[in-house]
Image (cartoon, rainbow, N blue to C red; front, side, top):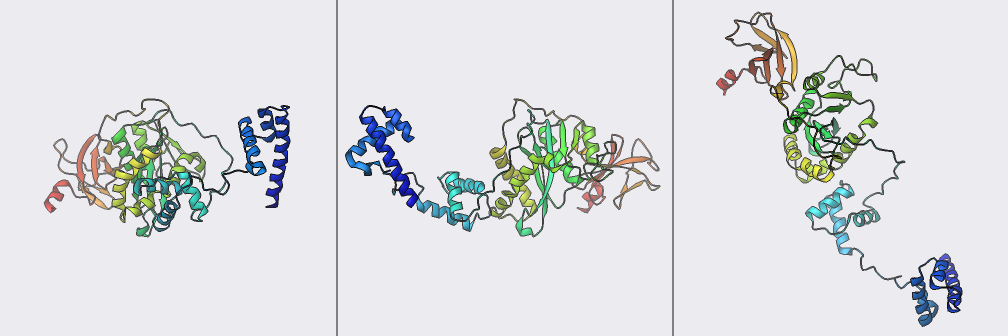
Length: 399
């Protein structure tokens, strides 16, 4: 208070000196205003008030008055109550979007954030570290896709963690050029099948892409030495499928290299569980429908950005059914009973018009992400089976 009084007295003294010089025409209004750190127009306005009311006319008349632009107290109280009762686990940005969408809320994001912080409902964010130059995005969609999984308590009522498979084209599959999510679904645990399923969804909707960027998990790469280089001569099932499709597979050697993907998962972990809770979703199947039909379209509309250049690097897929590429493929030698053993199932090769039997011949078994099986001799499919190893004919008889 004392300091404020001293500053006021200094200002009055300096103003009176400038006013005297102005009255004697030794200073112009602009020069006098510059001495006081204000515009010439403001100085002349104060001169009029000083002549009418003396020193009291110099005081700021806004002090003690409520700003006409101030947010209504009743609306702030309503917002605080909704945050405490329904949205306490939301980020402020996500909460503000829900208020505008669901509760006819008109106040801006900044007012909402500052009000929640002042009420002690939200902590102030920590100061960010020094700026680092970001890697430029690819100019066209389909040039580079990411895929990754994130283990998190996505559905709180299940009481256990699940893996969210994301990517700008598969599992979660993410596009580097736009940041759009092409495929996202929950699984109990990420692995080969979830990766292949994400790829199948992306290629089926958009076509083939140029490069695929992933971590060095065992379903993506074989790494002979712990933190060493991957062995590109020995392919996993995912690596073999990408090679057959002509897609370049790029390994990541640090979390920082996957920074864009890690930031996406950070956003999803602060939004998806809350959205699932509001929608009262308690099962993985319902959550995957919600992801596909509502969450991913809303996310892309909110966060995806336009590509730097017009056009697309996606190429339409032409060839054998994509499911017969994006599957587990293993060679087996046919037994004396014309059967193939695979995952504790005995798969009977039915009679073929072009060959009497396949005893001791090498055939290829396909296992699809949904568990179905098939036996191939080169490009020829000899038989298809359900996940229990029964042929279509047997399944229809049981049904």
